[in-house]
Length: 363
Ligand code: KG4
Ligand code: ZN
Image (cartoon, rainbow, N blue to C red; front, side, top):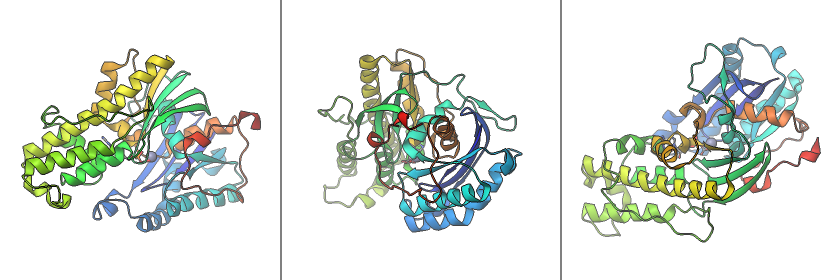
């Protein structure tokens, strides 16, 4: 079964075709990073307009790259939640229209749930050259989901059957990377910029606190972000009223790199502490990481060192937003659930995974 997946929830217009929930046939991502970097972050209206401009082209290109036509496609999967409303509307309208025109079943996909499914892609067409995991993860599976909007630990008993163990009480981890990058004067998006600067820095240069929370698997990154701000202010020799936008210019390159490395080390160690604790309690058969921050090499290194079982990683390009993860989860939806009517599909900009575990008696 071949699924065409459409993703447009934030600043990437992405379309991919995946066969049987495991084989990647094409993967096209049109990133708007260049457009938004001038503003230091995603501008929702600009994002929606850019999706409109390219969505048809990206769909065409995904078919072309896979050497397929619409006759070869069995279903369409599309992100309907969560995300920026204008961005979600463009992708879902394209998907609904095509489902009607081409007479294909339509599956709405939860973006955060889909990030986990990047780990289920283990095969690829000959023209694609990604370093894929050797096998699909086994259930029960512990997923550490870390993106610009989410930081959570989820225990999957099966496809669609999962429990949220804990989540961030304030900022998402990717958001913290982005905000600290801004303080340090590093370019958007902050995650890769911090990771790069950290390569030249000393992770032990500044002692930063880890948050203590009542929920065993909950996270908090707002305190860490403020601790970095205070430490930068001290190092720059200014008081706490000094505007954070002026701080970067007062740091030397080595101070900046040391802040990037120290922040990254502590933020990642916080994630890994909780993941290891959840592993000990639940003894899952596999552990996966998902979301944009899963592309972080320090996270991969610390997890590999501290988890008692081997872990495989999806390639970096399938960790950040893409259509392949949507098409992959689309397959597991298609074999277990009923499609939705193209007339009824609506977007839900804000929807936690606590509300999306599937009711499998549906089919
Ligand atoms: O999953 P994603 O592409 O979009 C959301 O659904 O949020 O995640 C984007 C986030 C951004 O905060 C970005 O800074 C972060 O992922 N990110 C990284 C890295 N690559 C992307 N964070 C740390 N290290 C990276 N290498
Ligand atoms: Zn995402």
